[in-house]
Amino acid sequence: MKRVLFSLVLLMAVGFTFAQEKNVKEAKAIANEVKPDFAKAEELIGAALTNPETKDDAATWDVAGFIQKRINEKEMENAYLRKPYDTLKVYNSILKMYEYYVKCDELAEVPNEKGKIKNKYRKANAATILAERPNMINGGIQYFNANDNEKALKFFATYVDAATLPMMAKENLVEKDTIMPQVAYYATLAADRVGDKDAVMKYAPYALKDKEGGKFAMQLMADAYKAKGDTAKWVETLKEGIVKFPDNQYFFANLVDYFSSSNQNDKAMQFADDMLAKEPTNKLYMYVKAYLYHNMKDYDKAIEFYKKTIELDPEYAEAYSNLGLVNLMKAQEYGDKAPTNINDPQYAEAQANIKKFYEAAKPYYEKARQLKPDQKELWLQGLYRIYYNLNMGPEFEEIEKLMN
Image (tube, rainbow, N blue to C red; front, side):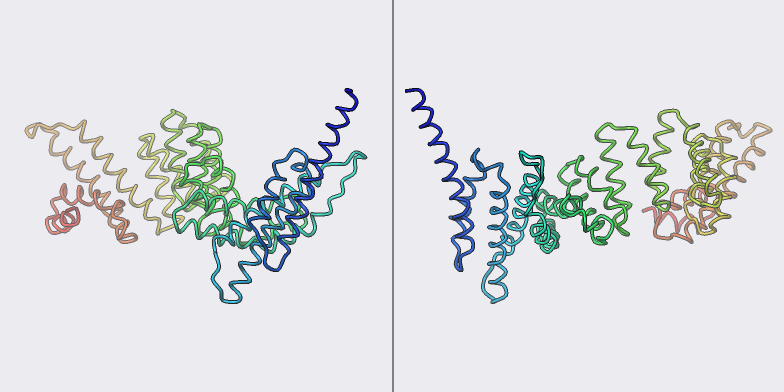
């Protein structure tokens, strides 16, 4: 009796498996029709994708991808015939097709009972993904412009991920795809907007070659490491940012602030020295060294290296601005120790010395203004103090108007 029951169970299992395999074939046949009933095809394949008997079969996922491919083809056929078509349906069908074909490839790469791999799907599916991959960008742009950043991230990320798939290895897309850095930049932006720090860290490295967005992607990557509490990677990214984007002050400013706040000025100085040893004529590294002395309140050394920075680049507005600032700080430091009693015999001499600091600062701030008139933060406050303390009436009135 038990043997009969066991046989019956086996027959039922075979029957269920056969039914699901039949569903897969029927779903494909429906999708291939001239006027496909895609709802029915998706219903049939959906059951097979979750059924234990067929969900681990590469053929099931291949058909699922094929159905999405056909949905896309029909929509594009409507577009070609100037009939109404659903743009988002086009993009989302391609996204689903990608996901199904990737799963198909993974399953097809599993060795059979003889230890052999017979992946008959890879060549055709890889070609399809490659042909439709640009629509991942279009879908991402549409959702990004609609401020649906989660969906935008999905599309942009999928475009980038496709380049690293084993089935795409022969294409060498990471090196050859010149658009990928820009797409990765938008993936990074979308990830940052939804607060997905892991995605920021994943896609930002691909964006660093983007001419416009690379430096900002690296900033977001640094911020992500900081938010995740990975101080070592944060500092490493800041250092790398200084080397890759020497004109962007974000990286060195954050690195210097970190070293200063953690009482590691010696490490910061060693970093600046190491960079200068490699590139002794690099204006940014010279500026960093000056800034470090500035931060350490070694004002004479700061002045020395700010001047060296200007020798390397006579139009380095930030260096002029900080030369002015250092002289004002020296005036403040000297004034704090100077006699304040007007009857003190040394009062007049002290005031004359303080005036010299303001006079020394004046041309530097004025030069910064000349070089970058729109960046008022570089010179406005400094000139206000200078013109006031030097009793420069007309100049002070003009600056005061700008202050207000």
